Length: 536
Image (tube, rainbow, N blue to C red; front, side, top):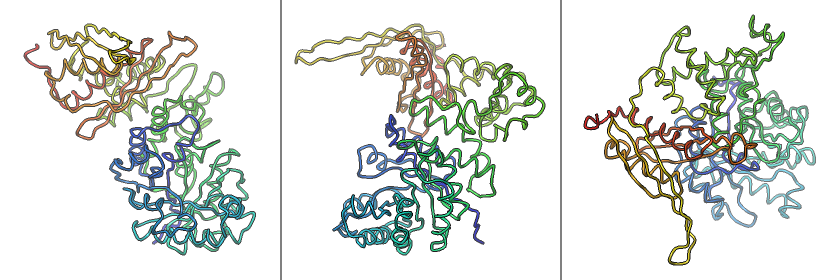
């Protein structure tokens, strides 16, 4: 039996999100975010536009292994005057590693007449022929009807001709796009309802921009009218004012409606983590007042609110914050964090009773360290080490006696200006001192190289470990060059594992060492390494 309440989730963060001012995804960013989206269990993850830029080409050449989501490539219809079979743009999509493709085209007669300067019949043919050709190579094709709502208001017959061409050619989804974000919910609901009289809602999607702060409301209005696919981005990233916030939509649909989005309660509980993971990847401060997942979303200040919440949280909280992986925050007497800490401990295999005194102690430690600038939502490996060290479960694989970094900026014999870094580290392993010196491409690379040079002979497990990303955030910019700095490092190994660690200090090299130390320690712990006997 067909579930007519099933809504399919389509994430466009890796493409639409990349159009956000100030956002520049690296290949490793895309891979990490795609894995997180797949881990949620979304129906579709759009990876970008193959052939459009080197980053997207590299990502499609080495995408993560999707277990739950369908991997989608985005591009445009064939160009005017070309056949679909001989269009280079379409060929890039069809030759990509994607499971499905999403093709956009014009649905507004004004754009066809002025921007493209082609006959309207040719535009309709471009849509239908492109979808039909895509289905000769891919199991699923979708059509994004660009500026559909403006086009429908200007010329309903032509806009419908465009989307019907895609549907008749076999498009699994025909997505109605409010591309400039200027349509209001009542208009969305009316127009989508009229479209669904001609094309089944089970084949209609909605894609809204947020220029009137109505993207989420417009998406919900489209669902009421019959659409059954929603497109959006994590945290509402996107061009201009952004796109519909998929985090908010998922929470609304799962907690406030009877729609079925195909996700379970575990995925719902990961929303805060995924939201903050994206911000950490982009080196951005999370929006404190974001619905559901913001730090202030369940914050209560002194006075009557606090006493009411203490008696019954439902007084001022529309949901239990733990449902979305967030926590309650009472500003005057902070009792937040226990449920969140317990859930995160369970994820790493530490089962504790809620009344275990170790839980309260860990909550206080996390609060104190986050006050100093640590952010464990994006540094799961450092959080695990923090918890396990509190339980005396992590061996002291090595400790730093001292390090020294020297930078040399000079003209070489060929008259070239070069900067070289040299690191000297002195470590203690099981009571034995070991010193190494190494050059590197910058002080952090030199420090990492020297650490490995000292440790790999003792811990061969580190041979396959590599650093894949390094980010620095200034936490106190008002302090100028004395500012507190947060360093986030992502590491990987040949077993396919990736882990994130964090360091905080007023000295960026010291912060980097702390993150490196955690990264190496986590790897050794997971590989069951033993402190070498000869060093004891």
